[in-house]
Length: 317
Image (cartoon, rainbow, N blue to C red; front, side, top):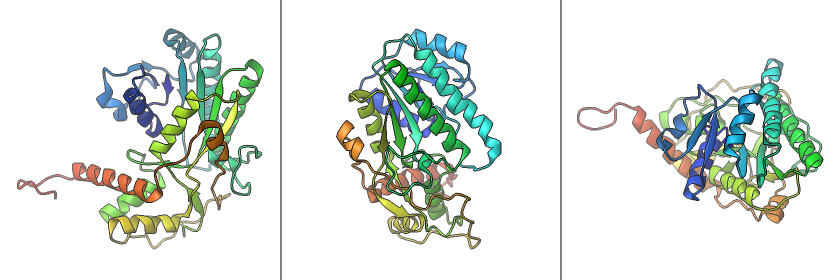
């Protein structure tokens, strides 16, 4: 059973699970267009559920009686505005608590929940799982709170819950409000990219490696409520990332002359320690940054060719 299956991460997980022969149940908002899953009709069971509705969530979860649960549903927002706090807490914390309650009484093998590594905030890198969290945004606060709810629930009940703290996944199909899709589109279309000076460093993990981490977390025995970082371990500045994409494209990416200011509470170095993932899960990233970027560039190139009208002679306009 997967919550948030129509998102970037969830849709990749659904396809991988189907390849593994799993029977997949998807919980999705009733009005969700589910465009990422449109070619999977007949292969998955879709249940229209809002995780904020505890009554319906409990009924559907009881009907499914899942063995493995991946909780990916979240209201995401890169904004730092305090006005977002109530809404993201209602979905990300409240929805998580509803799911924990809905699963109470069901004998399941593992619940895998995800959290953002942004919750480490201004801790000194590399970020370790035992660090006190310091979330710089409403979104990371809500995910940190959900993590604590899962850990508390596991401590109280012994429930088999594993929390993965993810470091900036990327790859084909990612929403275009994220940096890498914006960067690639700018390089392919020639539209200037608006960005900061790009001195801050980040750790980007290719989507296939993230999915492998999710599957291993579902299969390997871990302590109830254990938190595990999942990331590439490779630190690169945003400016350096631009240069990597330029090498792949063979041309410069146009940068808008009006440089964006850094965000308040900007995390300057966003990189983690992944020893626990190696020891507990046997997980290591396998897709190098250059290869992952090249795959992603080709996917967006194909998407752009579909978006552009073709002339009568068959050439792309």
